[in-house]
Image (cartoon, rainbow over all chains, first blue to last red; front, side, top):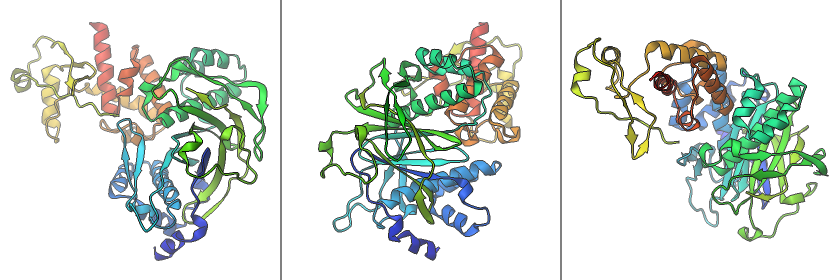
Length: 318
Length: 146
């Protein structure tokens, strides 16, 4: 345990804060951690709060689910602690939820010399094969991931009619290949979920059927270092609270087997004290910059190879 | 999401002695903090009294779905999530069983199809546990017959 804590303060695991218009995405693939690394699993368990441990113990009849929940808590704790310059240990963070279930972090240290806890927004999503945590500074963020090969037990078009807007369902019905139709449905679903999670006001404030994502191939947008993406205009037929907020969406494939969507608020640059950063190698088109890592918490981080951006929206007011 | 605990006050007569010949009770709407909960049907006293005896927990005054409904709901959920039915308890939360939002929607659709009912989105959103789902199903089915 001491060895791990010493690693914790190792500088290569710390990160500078996300800048304006920047989203950091941390991806954890459970396949990267072997079952034999019992010391690592033990360390992860020790990061958890008593209530988290109890909660996980309750699903003892479902080991895969237990693992997923354990890794989810590990990912969010270690991710947030990265941005605290080694001052805060992952196990010392506490979490609360707002009335709609959106999580928030409470830092144990309020000040240390000149250091103050950063104003981080974060969101977590997971499937059994991939867990992702998105982090921004001050801008609300939502993220959702689904497996491409996810099995549906219901008829897909019935699901689409029920959950998507009429325009989206009509668009989906045009696909004749069931595989492609399923993939498109999953993409739309992750976009919607990311939006609802970013808003953090629950499903009732942003009913899924009342806003529409459309894919417009007429003006492709290029993101450097990621493949060519198409622009997705988003129209909202119903005003939601804070309708002067601007939101931006990125649809991506973090791996060949997954679709994920990220939704983030575009804040005026006056929100930030410094000027906006220019990062090497990343386009600042539409002011959205994304950095994605593949991580084994407390062990290593590397750039996520093979992530593909599928679509990016123009920043639009909701 | 606020958990709605419907606190009803049963009148003493219903709780005391099982009485199979008692007339069906009326639909009552429970409220909690001024928010309307989904309608709760008072159970036939026989079933309720038996449940009270069997339960080791303090008296939870919410009308429960009958065991058959709970069984059907549980097995549908187990099938949807591809888990063993033994893992599906009445007080299991959907999220604790590994259901994400898409699973929950598919479960709702399966239940609607099985019981030939329509579930209101507002009600569906308040479902947290398997028991909630079974209770809601039973209410909607009863309301449909009424």
